[in-house]
Image 1 (cartoon, rainbow, N blue to C red):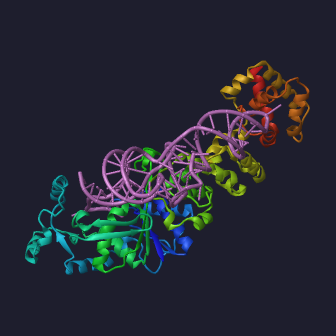
Image 2 (image 1 turned 180 degrees about the vertical axis):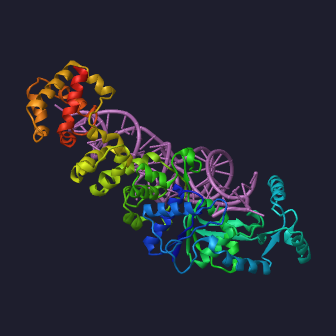
Image 3 (image 1 turned 60 degrees about the horizontal axis):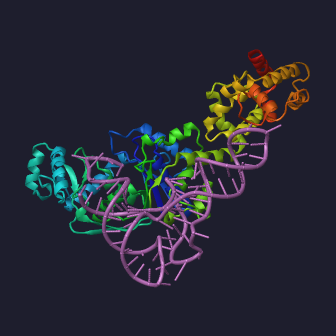
Length: 479
RNA sequence: GUCCCCGUCGUCUAGGGGUCUAGGACACCGGGUUUUCAUCCCGGCAACAGGGGUUCGAAUCCCCUCGGGGAUGCCA
């Protein structure tokens, strides 16, 4: 058994496509099926090698792997449709010879006009020149005029096509109702998707087509092609689409839709995979946080949701935070380093152990990796300029007392080796202040904020010299 | 317009004739822990689109309406 993911390289990997790819991957893994990646690049104007590369890159980042594809090869290639035109030509000849397809000499502009009329009157589409009814002489005449025809597939009248779908059940279409004879080869000789998808799936021995619901209406056309060509019809599973907040198809105006941007913002692939899998599906166990091997275990072709799902950025973020909190510390550290550097800090000098301690302390404040930029300054800035709240607090008399005391103690009574254990307790001894009155000014001086990580742990990580500077800074500023 | 799909808390969903005064998660609101914040824990708010059937009994089956989505390309 075999599944496939067949993106067209006309842009970045969209979140909706990533979900389709993931569904194919999970199902393949679960059943021990093979997975083929095929590039559908017949739209020459919009396709690019660059976007093929970026799609492959994003797929790999997500942890989706395939057995056959343009990058890894395989016995059923080539895996780019643009490299398979010879193959399609044979089938087109066959269809033409058997009169199951015919050249159409009508111009796109003429057809647009007719389509509009048809829409109003609700009758089946027939091309204006009735090319399907032409005899060889008429065709020869057209050819001699130099008109390059498109090829249309002759849709058999009055047929009922039933598509069996794992998710939707049995769906019936009437052949008279699928829009008339449709084009399978453009006038420039390049075949179109609805046609060659059938050939490729058959030749690549795809047994199960798992794809978005937007392809459901195309399916009867594809079934008809398969019949005409005597090719096998795969099993179908059309999953529901991903929607934006306003319940229309997810697009850029709803927020980020490219997998690449999620990566750059600092989402973890494990979290994105987990979230995407949960969108339109629920584990029998009721668990929401599931690693990929658990997803593989629990997901099934028959328990995917039928209805469309709104993409909830908020919940993705929450889920990513859960992953950050539970991630292996050394891996998380590696992933956060670029963001820390991006924020302008150099980390070479501090040593791995200290860095990891630091990351461990701040990870609880991060939902995405880039959040580290907002909090890491507490530890790495030389001096922390108090923010609004901290500034207000430090202007108060009891704060001034503590700042003065802290300055005295750090200069004369403690040293680099014992300050983190003794500084706070010594201040406590020498003042009548306690509780918030004691801790909050201290926090304000040392971190420049009123909110943040545990003071005792922070003290050591910030370091003696910086703390001294920060106290001095506040002493000068608020005395 | 026509064809096709779908309709349970704001969102993702569980449920498939009685066990449903409808369960979980995110969000939101309270409370606890943390001398702060975040985390964590506990609690609360909140839904079967509407109307007809079928049935002793309907969120669950059928029909209609309404709502949403998709397709209707010489895009995929």
